[in-house]
Each structure stands twice: as C-alpha cells, then as structure tokens.
Image (cartoon, rainbow, N blue to C red; front, side):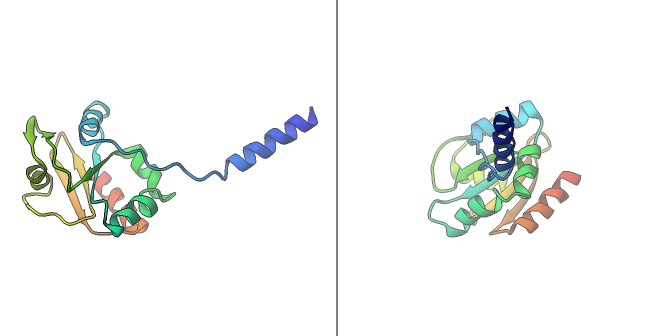
Length: 148
C-alpha cells in the first residue's frame, strides 16, 4: 500500500512539470463559428510557411507559459496562411484571400507576415499588430485589448 501511494505521489509530482501543450489552431470557418457560439474574439495569426519570424511566433511566443493561457481562455485562435487562395466567409460575404486580408487589415491590400489580429466579430472591432512580438509585448497587447 505504501509503495502504491509513493508511486502515485511521484507520478503526480512529475506530471506537474509536464510541458504545456501547443496551442490548438482553428480554420477561419471553424473559428468564426466558435467565436459566434462562445462569444469570444478571434486571435487571427496570418503567416506563410517559409517565414522564420512566423515560425518563432508560433513555437516560442503563442506557446509561452504566460501567453498560452491568456489565448486559450479569452480567444478563438485562428491561423491563416496568406499565400493560399481559397474562399473565406466573413460578414455573410464570400471573399477571396486578397479581399479577406484587405477587410481584416482595415483596407490594406498587402499585409506583412507575421501579423496578429485581435478581432471581435460582432463589433467588427480589431487591433492589428505587424511583425514579430516577444511574449511580454503580446501579453501586454492582449490585456489592453481585453480591457476595451
């Protein structure tokens, strides 16, 4: 009995040091549906596969132990490859990639990568952040957006 208890305690102790899981990303269609049903804003991450800053944002910033819970508790995370042409549904319209990016980026036809957008669907309210951010900067921007 003591061995079982000891093994259980050791297991629980070691489990507490387990690395946090990676952020679960949704497609735009899934994200918009979840944002409506859960009444949460979207964190839209616009990237391209060949961008090293985009890869760093995804692996080191979004999965940071301080940032990850802020995102999962307050946002629907959506990842969008800026180079893939497809139809996107937004505000009951069907848009191609170029026009969708123009709409979410306040009228710009070209958008740099990485770009992170905090977007409240029902209010059409957005905050756009271009470029690589460190975890502290992203945390501050999230908290500022959530206070609005």
